[in-house]
Every structure is written in C-alpha cells, then in structure tokens.
Length: 482
Image 1 (cartoon, rainbow, N blue to C red):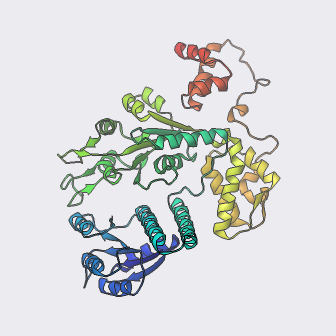
Image 2: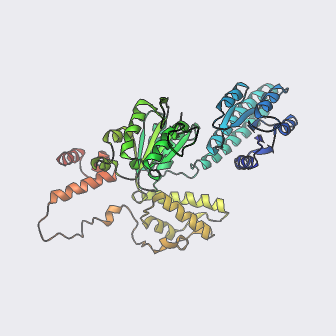
Image 3: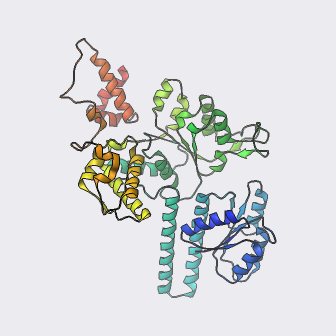
C-alpha cells in the first residue's frame, strides 16, 4: 500500500517510515503540508499519516484541502497529536480523519490502524472493481489484496511476539483452546501460572488477540519492578500536584491506556499487600480514582495476571489477599514446565531453528539424532525461553544443514543415556531408596507427596489424582485429612 507520511520532525518521521517499510508498504516522506499536497495531487496514496502541528500548513488545513479535491474520496487520513491536544484530535475526526495516534507513536497501535485501513481500502477496491471491471480481473485483484493482508498479519504477529509460537503436545493444544475460550469473554479475569520462561506472556497475548482477530490495546506492567508508590501511580495515573516530582499536568495510568483492551499484570504476586485491596476494588466496581484525584473513572479492561510462584501458599503466609486470589483465579491456566512435556521439545526446537536460520541467512534445515537426544535429555530449568536462546546461539555460531550436538555448546555435557521424562523420576525411584534406622511417620511423607503433586498441577485435583494413580475420592479424603 502506498502511504504518504507528513511530519516536520525528521527523527519521528524516519522511525515511522522505517517501521511501515518493514511491514511491506511503500512510503513517501514529506516535511510539510504544502509539499505533501503537491505530491498527493500527482500520485495515488490510499493512506496518509500526518502530524497536526507543522509550519506553513497544519495537518488540519492539509486534511481540509484534500477533501476539496475531486476523486480523492478513497484516501484514509490518520493524524498525529500530543497527549494534551485531544480537542484538536476531535476536530480532526469531525473534519473527516479516519483516526488519530498519540505521540510518541506506539508501533502496535500504528500496525493495527494500518491493517484496518488496508482492509478498508481492500473493500473499496473490491466494490469499485465490481462495478467497473470483468469478473476475471476482480478475482485477480482481490487475491492480491488477500495476499497483502496475510503479509500484514504476519508482520503484525512478529511485532507482538506471536510469530514463533507452537503448540504440539495434546496438553498444550488443549491449553491453547482454553486460551481462545477466555478470549471470547472479556469480563473473566485470567490467572496464568508457570515457571519462569514457560511462556506466560505469550499465552496472555493469545487470550487478548485471539489469533489476531482484533487489535485492541494490550498494556503490560511488571509488578516486581516497581516500588509501592510507583506501582500505584503507574497503574492508576495521577492528577496535577499529586506529589512532588510529578508532571505539571498529571499523567494517565496504564489502566487508561488499556481502555477497551487488556491490562497484563506480570509477577502479580509482588503487588504490595496494601495495594491489593485497591486492585480488587477496581476489578469489582470497574472504576477507580487517579492518585490525588476526586473524580471516578469508569473502565472497560480485561485483567490477565501471571506468576511463577504458588499464590495459594502466599495466601496462607498472609502475603496475598485471599479474596483477590479467588477473584483473579476465575479463569486459570497452568503451563507445565518444558521438562514435563518432552513431546514439545523437538518441534519447538525445529520451529526456532527455521526462524533464526531465515533471519540470519544460515543453512540449517533439520536436527540430527544425537542433537535431538541431547535436547530431550536436558532438564531445561529456563523452559521454552532457554530452549529458544540455545537454538539462537547455535545458529549464530555455526552454519550447517543439520544441527549437531557439538553446535549446542554447554548442553553437549549432558548425559544422553536416558531421555528425560519427568523431574520426579530423578527424585523417587521405587527400587532404590534408603529407610532411616529410627521410626518415622509414613502419613507425614504421604501428605507431603500429595501437597507437592497438587502444587505441580496448579491445584487441579483431577490431574493430581491421575498423576498419583489414585481415585479422586481417595485424593479428596486425603485433602480433608490435611
């Protein structure tokens, strides 16, 4: 798609232009409205991106002059505006602008708007062809449009981190289906539990985007990286004069940015105890106050949380509110560690191998037998993230058609005599164990095994009973005794 980009800020224009070119578009850049009007009059540009505040001719004046030109009704204009210039943005929409973007430009929002315009232009093109051309030409043109849209979706998937996602084992396929079900109902909060590197944020993005079916805001916040005071102002925003050192006009919070979309609270267990009640109130009442504010703000935001710790235990320790825990866990997904789903290791490795080989111009096409055995024997404490990094390092350091065990660096020291199945096999061997000389409580050991099995399966009693090879009734009886 031909895009006309108008911005007197060279750095901003260059950044936006490079991103659009990476998406496969043809971009013509202009530094002012007069130059842009001249180029637009002599060319064909289905989409225009223009700053509002520019010398000589503002973005609004440029938009009005375009609307007066004959046969120029098929262009979609998106204007850039600053946070404190919302009234101008509203005037732009009334003047016929397709949409507006806040500066600095968010690339996810830019990609989403560009895709919507591409679809809009595709519909315009299709309707025009229906009335002016033969059916054969219509079929060729629409097929070209479909290919362009597929390319745009692929680029968008790369920008939001969904381009190298694979679900291969039956357990992970069911997990993905569960994520898509949660996508269909934005009112249900979802708690994602799993070890570090297991892919919690990827699952959160799948719940939000639903296979790229919609492009609503996805705003994440790392709860472990902020102090209590910073967390509150970051989440809720603050009014002018709320505290020393704040911006003179105040600032919107992450909840404002996520309106209509999703707020993703990573490491939710680290939210300070004194702020957990405020988060619970927001989820229940769908409204909140900014720091130092007196006006209630209504919100329409889906809440997705992730943690790598046992929140149930945090509740028992008094470090996490029980009512908030049950509110977050209405929707629940537990991601098993990679060592417990060996069937996923080789397909994921092949996916990463293909991705990085293409990106780095290498010749790798398959994984050798010894390398595959090595990958399956390693216990992967860093989970999928560690596997991805290992493959990327191997592709960067070597260049061959087949990935060999020697390419995998430190992993080559791992014993490959017995493929890894589950971590418990290395801890409990029914044929080799030693009893203490003194008496001990068998009941206590059974209880501890049950507790660890429940933790391993995220509290799912059906999976825990199946894992321990006992009936659910027997498991419930044990839990009641506990």
